Image (cartoon, rainbow, N blue to C red):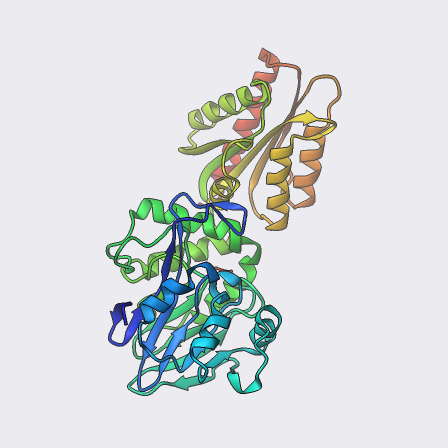
Length: 397
Ligand code: FEO
């Protein structure tokens, strides 16, 4: 076995993908991504999840001559399940341990249809591997798909958490968070992963956190990114904040701009917010910034100011994509403001106001501008920023 031993008989067998540029064909990977599999060796040996099919050979190299008795499937998205057919071929006696929904997906995705292959588990079931290695299964549906589950190892205080607590970014060297990548980068990559992939399922995440609350977790072995140990409680806290809608007293200003007239508004608003005591302000040009980066900060801060030109009687397309992403993820409990511009017929201000109001996030004020900035519009933008700052600073952090 060539995998990295995390604890006695428990190995990290994850692989790094530094080639794929867009995760799910959507989300940029500036630091790559890891697909994490693990091996638990008792008298019997279990492989916990697998990897993307493109990297199956790397996984097999890590396993070496190890015989795999069980494959535990926590999640069926193909970045973790893609190697299942190859593993079934290599280990004809291997049993697949999963819940009923996952079994159905394995049949559908990969045509693995032999009933003898499967050990179907449900909430609280255990699998004893011998040698002091017992696996206990917790069903955590919709974190991130309906079949998702987690495995708890009581004696080792280790949780195999599936996508939960995962992050973008490859694992450089030692998979334990004691050594791996710079924390500020990792934290952003975790927030970006959450906002892009998991945020839609915040309620199930909260349900899963409630279920796991009493467990004395010391190691979190997710399917992406490092194994959390030193930062385990910190990571759980960040996840709790992101999924429960707890925010900081900051503002994201996301704008679209064709010729600079709308971006001028972002600058005026940002300066005014800072003058009014908002210390964390993040300004994004939605047409150029990575959407997941904008979402990550929106999930972090209380305030959101959206500004858009009118484009063919609609919201400017990159701002429209952002608003759609917020609707899909059911953003809640934010202080919002709207700015819309137009040349001869106004639409963006009204449409943005309607969309945010329909989400239960009515703007504190909507400002509309024809053609270009003037003193009157600048005063209205400052007033909008003042109203947002007052509301944010008086809210609980
Ligand atoms: Fe990493 Fe939802 O798969």
